[in-house]
Image 1 (tube, rainbow, N blue to C red):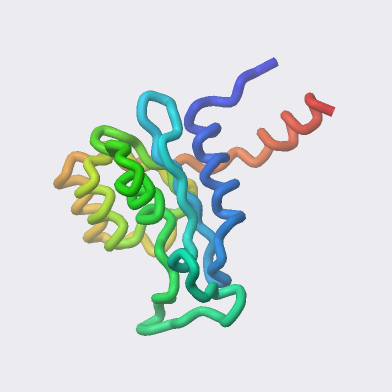
Image 2: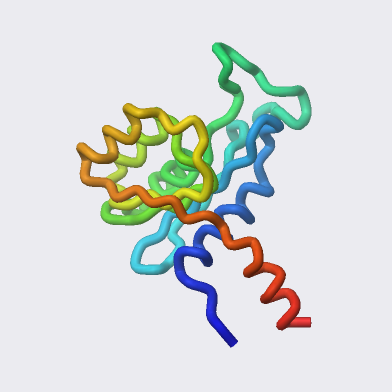
Length: 154
């Protein structure tokens, strides 16, 4: 039996996390990894105990839902909350990070960003990643992996 690659494994984890998203505009998942070990995960949703977009709709200002915290920031904050270092880690995200998440990723010391889908890729975000020496790479999710492994395990 062929094993799933590390990149596909972590990208699949990020897609699974995106199923927890409470934003109706875009579901995003993020997985932070160090030494091929998952150290945190996040999805876009409201603050703990807050109102969710799925319950009351998105709160949109200037074309952005301001009710939610992005998946990347939720994962980084989870590390901060529990004292898990992010320096030299990697992050796998379902969509290319927004400009604000790009800044957070850089400040957290994350060294690589793997993303499945382009999403409003901001030119300045790409420039910031390059300036900071953060490797970025598109890793589309191989959806056939799920079908293959589901079939093998029946």
